[in-house]
Amino acid sequence: MSHLQQLTRHERRTAHCTKLILLVAVLVCGKVTFGQQPAAKKPESSPEQDVQAAMDDAIARLKSGDVVGFIEFYFPVDELRAARKGRLGKSFQRIRNPTAAAKVAARLERAKRTAPKINLGGFLATFTIPEPDEDSTDIPAQVVPDISQKKLDRYPGTLAEALQLAITDLQAKRVEAFVDRLFPRGESGHPDAALRRKQLKLRLAQHPEMIEQMVADLQSILRTQQVRRIVGTVATISVKGKSRSGKRGDRIQLPDRTFRFEKTDGSWRFKDTTSELVKVQAQVAAKKPPSLGEFGTADAIIMERFGDRWRFVEF
Image: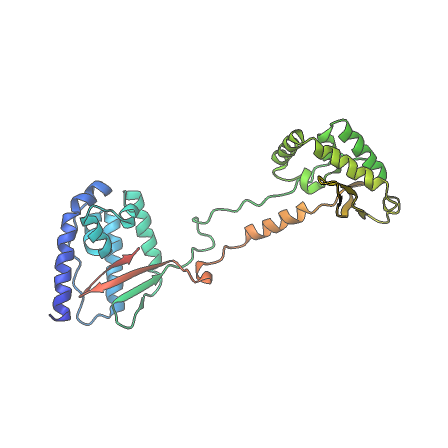
């Protein structure tokens, strides 16, 4: 049997298969219209021209509501075979209603902006879908977080005086006052400050030992000589780790710890690292997302040729 005879036999089987699923198409897609068979290719046309003509016809069928014709002449062969056995594949889901079919038509139109790449055998054509334009409405606007610059409550005086006031607030369970007056602007002015504060209060309520540890840490800082020898607006204070008894009676050496403070708007606070993180997040959010092509996974639509007709491998 010649190759041409094999193709003809294959086309007959495919046509028979599609006729069996036309009723399924009506049930899946709703009201549809029946179009004419695609025009045969011109003798002098090239594979590129033929596949472009097939793409035009496929788009026109979807736009006119001829979903049955789209299925019969352009659906992937493997999905037609599966549908014959009662299994509807992903392609049926993609045209499950007029709105979905319109999205597929728009996707095909985007693909048609690029010239198809035909393989050496002339039986496969690949359309690489271009990235959306920068001003495309398909790209949602990025919400850039911002740190509030409103005036903050503060502990007055030197760092030592501020820490002593902070200890007093913690011992009196005035956690919100402690947060407002000693936490950095990046935390107090964070876009999600209310939620973050609520979560902090919940953790402290569930673990009161955390407050006790903070008081102990601030008291340890006050006992150092560094806190009284600060020059400038930035202070880095190291506290040597203590040893404590372990569960087996041995001594466990705790690691040394470092605390950083800075003087902003006339008062001392923990050093602000959150604002810089928010700034970086804003810069990343403002950038155009990388194209899929940069990762070797560019979005593509593939068509294959059977005889003188083209149909989708996937769309």
